[in-house]
Image (cartoon, rainbow, N blue to C red; front, side, top):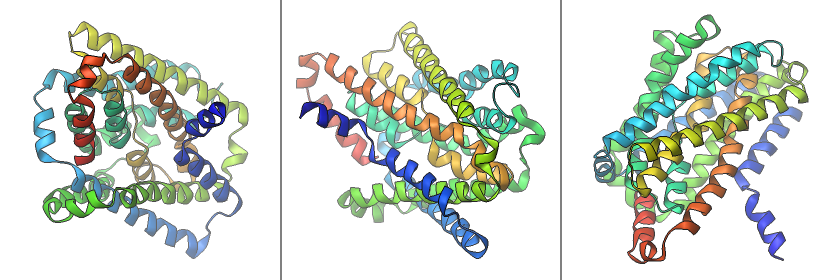
Length: 341
């Protein structure tokens, strides 16, 4: 029975939903008017997703977390400097080992901001500095709205259609809804706290709609004829190596900077993540529609790997926590902060 329970706990329902969505899009892709309708629906879903992100973020928790500026600087460096630098050696593998579109996808993955929900959740499970994680993950996404497209333009040049209009489109879909959520937070935050499951359903449902739309367009354009299973395995190996290197750098760097245990945990979980919720809509705005489904494959694979690896790592941190630290209320406080975010 224990083995069965462990197997069930290791199968994240969202990962299974992602795989099922890809399978459905591969068999029954939307075409014509249906494709346009799903495209509009995915745009609306992403706007709603970032509106709810803004409504959830507690300004007080964010201000409390901003005091650890050295921690945020480390996380920012990991997210927007270390990750892209680690992609430079891949130029030697392209196009021999992986096709050009997957190479573009790996570079795109490297410049994306950190996740919000999972960074905070894993920091909370590991009993780290949740207030700092709330601040850092949220600021990463806000900065990423502007910085990620600019880095795409610098690293990929003509392979991405970064222009003033595309930057405005990214801001319109991601930043403006977030700010609107912040403005209306006092009115709708109580309802969000009363219905956390409904909120999670909106989060995940929005991402699944974007995945279906992108992969449906890719299937129509012949994605599975352009990518072999060997190339997917190669991308998976690269993603695993990338995550392992960043986790190591974040752990060693936080120790060298003299951070306490809570800040080290926040650095590890915020600095090693890449946001699927931000990356998918950004990809649809920055790359040609026929290539988006291939370009986001490395991100989708990385997303699943980071969830599995960080879930195990957060439980390991929690088991190592000293009994006296657990007794002082750090766990419940962390959970409350995560809920407030």
